[in-house]
Amino acid sequence: MTDDQNGPLSDADSPAGVDRRSLLRCGAWMGAGVLWGISGGVPYSIGLLGEAEAAPVTGPTFIQISDSHIGFDKAANPNALSTLTETLGKIDSMKAKPGFMIHTGDITHLSKPQQFDDAKQNIEATKIETFYVPGEHDLVDEDTGKAYLDRYGKGTKGAGYYSFDKDGIHFIGLVNVVNLKAGGLGNLGDEQIAWLESDLKGKKDSQPIVVFAHIPLWIVYADWGWGTDDGAKALALLKRFGSVTVLNGHIHQIIQKVEGNMTFHTARSTAFPQPTPGSAPSPGPQVVPAEQLRDYLGITSVTEKKGSKILALTDSQLSKI
Amino acid sequence: MINFGKHPGACLAVVLSLVSANVGVGLLIAAPSQAEGTNQVAIDNFTFQPGDITVNVGDTVTWTNRDDIPHNVRATGGATWKCAVMDTGGTCDIPFKTAGEFTYFCALHPKMVGKVIVKPS
Image (cartoon, rainbow over all chains, first blue to last red):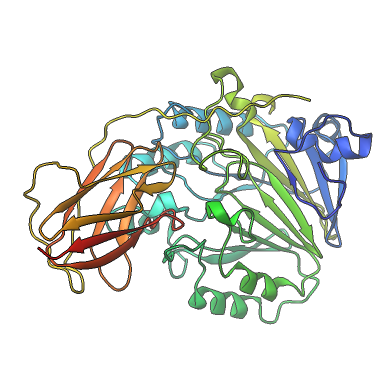
């Protein structure tokens, strides 16, 4: 792993032969999980998950789940609905219940009504308010997105982008999975970027921002399409803010990166892992021994400290929640 | 060092796919009539294989998804012919009635691109 504070921290990093500081940075990879604080845009590790759980929760929290792929039934996970319900059950039994959830897309595998209904029924059973953005798998119905918008489009614009305020944080859900161009990456489009500019207009630089979208807004690995072509335009609009947290899914593994006041984080899937960038012939579902699958699935919880810029990200494996 | 070895694998299940063909710019579409022949494009490891396929006017090209993730086919360059999403094992037939070069990509994974070269008879 790298000692570069600005280098990406990922599931691929190895904990072998590292000091305690580095070990803390690698905690998320190990599955112990690290409670991440962000102060003035600079992240710091507060402790391993066990310590973090023992510490009193002083602020509101929310959970990020991603890539449920309801309907997927191949070797990498023959029952994606089962691992989603298992995940939701563990969230439901957490001591400090999250205030709400964000789902960063690929709710379904093939945009079929039954897949949407199964996801909806199980997520709503938690009675935790949930905000969504679509993944590319949620828009493959015959009407290219109608099935998603019929369920989650109320109050959104375009293909489903919107913003809202909670606990002093401005949340922005973006859609970067429509009108993709041959040979390209994720796409926001000029209309959505213009909307983002107007949405941010008048907001103070000190306003904490959380942006969430399916495909990473930064270029993780272009060869596999893991990035957004015009993501830099959106990030330029966010640059003036003192605390920006960008939450994405799509790549089914944790990668974190810090640039200035922006922290980028991708979440694990609740369904199946994908290989680390470039480590396999393609980014297709990664088959792991069944007894290890839950080590590769998980959630991200975020703690907000009221009155400060701090957001603390904690990644947890499904096997250890 | 903890060994998290990679075990990429594939498990094929046969799922019928929808086939959708639209009339595109410079391309006339007829109802598929040709029996399955050699004009096959496999989708494997997020690539169209072969990337470029050459056929004769009137031939039908068949795409078959061998990945355990869904893919589709969308024409580029203003044409509108397409294959609906194909799950694992799914196929799609598109007849090509005019000569020319027809480029396409997977709209879910746009790094996947291919071309059908149709020779005049």
